[in-house]
Image (tube, rainbow, N blue to C red; front, side):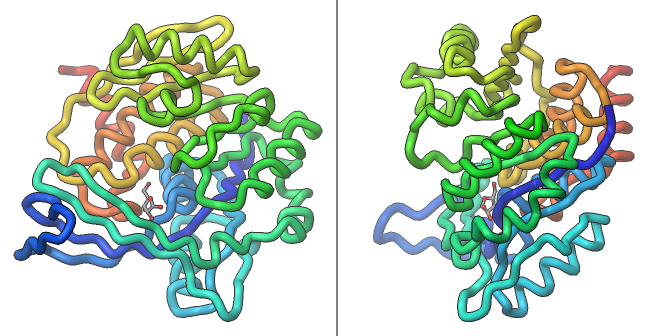
Length: 309
Ligand code: RIB
């Protein structure tokens, strides 16, 4: 299989600050290091898929401001088709405030801005692009009706879908039977399955429960413990690659984008997960969302080195 990956999702400008520890409510911490980078779960996943070798189209909504125009140019630089991006006047581009502590953990607050104004009319105008995709990738930083419309169109056109259930919003399950591949972390898996997910055996039970909602393949990322993968003919824990984290921002996005590229290329499910895990491992050793996303050459070199060890 090969072909186009269409990502429908958010694009944010990330204002990031590294601090020794996250402040408690009402507290000020100082000596932070500041940077402004491109982010947004959708744009990060599109970037990860493109850098991993995928042919990517990005459907999104940004403000008609300096950030929106710069983002489009930046995504073009990664070879992503951006003519499907919608520009909104009178609204600012989405933004995120991200604090990262000394252990690489983060806390993120998002102001969706133009992301919330992505319209069904625009998706309808892009329906030819969606129908011609080898895989459609979605996350949850855009309006729910857009997700529902895209999943329905994909089902009708027999295009497989990957939904990254992040961030957690409502935990409805009626769209689940339209999801080919669900990628969730422990917290998202627990919210959607209404089961605890703290270890491998709980992940296994949650994945089985999620598949009963009609999802074909469930991937639960368990951080350093690896990925629990559950499909009709495959069930296993695929180990993660041990690395020292600097910043975990966009690790999940890098995973989803790299997985999409590998899957569309025809790699098997476990091979695609291993490829995605390698990409995510590299990303956590670097600062920022899109600046941390590796290229195909970097992922291949990482996997070759890991194999030799
Ligand atoms: O997943 C990381 C992303 O979440 C950041 O880039 C930020 O923009 C938020 O969307």
